[in-house]
Image (cartoon, rainbow, N blue to C red; front, side, top):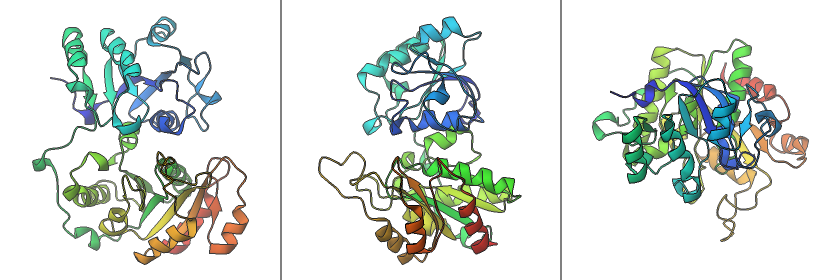
Length: 352
């Protein structure tokens, strides 16, 4: 009997497929920054091999080597890893043909494969046959739950007094989960017992204790699964504060998420992440689908009766944070370059 996905734990290599410096390698980035589920031994990346992770990704918890392929990794490392984790959110949630080799190589070496893609690799005929031949297992963490395992929203969350903050973005792949991590670290260091409610595959893979994978959940049950995760966190850990990771954005046309966090999680405030370098929604540059302005998004959030308590800048440019602070009278930081403590202070001032 194999492990259930909740029981996954052990040593791992992470596959970033030549995309370690790309925003879509966000699972790899997340595991390099925080990983309680896996002890990451290294990465497989065809473009950045013979370097170390910290040469490419900031704020690495541990600086690990990057290998060109699995063969080089196994020859170099002292021990074979338990898992190969797919660390890229490929477009459309499918594994491109040019990246199939890493799955085959891993299974041939009796290394379990962990995938958060929408495409269920365990149902691929070639992979299925190879896994059966070698005894390795493919763990698809986005495999949808059955209806019997899911919950409807009950309204019990409305009785919960524990403060809750939604960390939303004006687009997908803006660093919402990373902002959750930085805020959690800062608040916990200040003796505010803070827990993260994950809503995506990377948060699960990092080992956060409470949450669910929103885009692998039947739509009618999203609100209920969110409520259940929050209530379970309150019951099991009793934190002072919860940070709820947003998915996509309120107005991304391919996945307009966020209202569930505002309404079904009954949050008490919002931290908003805005990608200032983008003019159009990610992956919709060709049709020029324009991103909302920061002001427009804040007004939309206000229309839900929620207040934005801080703004995080996602940009490689030098954005004038002071101008934004003066315009909206809230703290504004670039979390990759500076402390998020001013946003933590805003949260505490408004909720405690």
